[in-house]
Length: 389
Image (cartoon, rainbow, N blue to C red):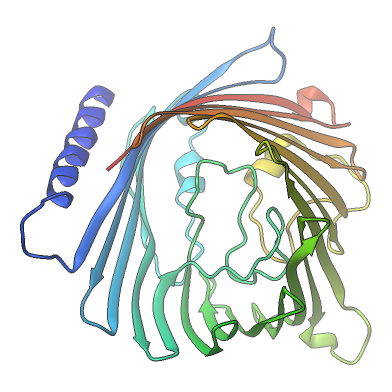
């Protein structure tokens, strides 16, 4: 059955590739592209203990239609087939994968068996209107207000998990967005979002450039529970990039007292002459735990929000990236939290065989003070091939 599914998706991709690359003289006003990925995961807590093997066959389709000079329609679909031991041993797995965070239910299980299931979702589905210096977008869209790389307290709409490296596009939000550009270096951004619990988040952001630094300030109403004020910047220091964000959340039900909470991130990145790049970032999460024991699944599967960017109060991450050749590069990342003494290590290698075909290897290592038999230690090994069309 799996071989048939694999063959079917690959054939569909080839057909779409030929269709999308049609070189007829008539100019099209639409584009269709995407990719097919296969990834295998091997996980274990101790190398001499049980090993678990899982597989994901992943197809993405991106459709963009320029209706006229002002209107654009965009739809992007994510289709994944999961099979392996976790699917067999964990019956709730399809339900977890299929969790919908948007107001509209655009995720569904295509089919489900004892050891396999297929899940599809539209993570982009919007209509965009442009006229002069005004842009209006309605539907499921990506709204990125972040300035730092890993943790984004300013990103009230699309928090994402650093450990989910296989989701490059990141999630979208069901929202109405108005962007106004007073000048080439400034922007006013107004957004209203509704989530799967019918909770409204409404906020406005103003971004401008001063002293060769991009600066933003924001205010809003988060998930009908908190008022929020925030600011962020992206500039340079010692020929490297310096970035930061801060958000202050104050419960609407206790507006007159001092029960507000800060979430802050600060990062620095520098690229050497030999193209070696280093990045460092720290997070203070006023909602995080000052102490406690967490297992690796808590970090891996946690649902992130601007108020829940980490489980702990303080977190730090460093990353080194180096292109050994133009086609072969490596990355090593490390994360540490002093609150629970948890450590994450993540080396990876990527090789581009062709312009549209690559192979990658990833490792994710977790350890903490929580005993290993309670999930305090774990290793995930991945290898992935990706073909784009």
